[in-house]
Image (cartoon, rainbow, N blue to C red; front, side, top):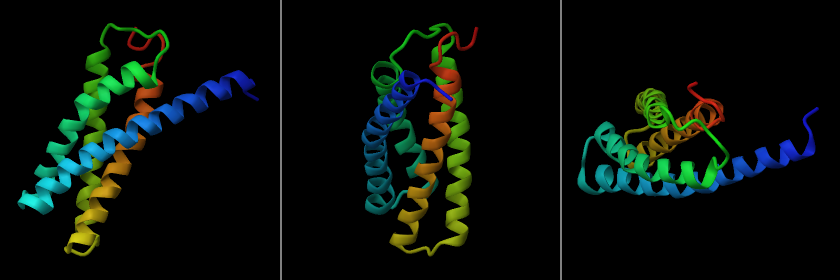
Length: 139
């Protein structure tokens, strides 16, 4: 059974990740929907643009606010970019599945984008917590 201080620390990490994720997701979703629904940009391109815009904000929030303990700086940015690439691949797969199974109207397209956002959020947290920002990562 984990010690209470470990559970509190992990709960704090999850809470900070959630807050950072809300900010990052809201920003990315605004970019995505503005491009896709507002300007008619193709869904995958709109999603990629929102993802890229959120990547910069996400790195700063995760590095300075979420994962604040000691960590290996060597290779940090490389691990972060690899995590984004893996999470983005998962995101695109979910987005394509949504396009195949949900209505093509605005509500269906928005639902597909929200499912895709959720998939990369979970993928990112797991990889960031276990690999990118953990003490001694990459060494």
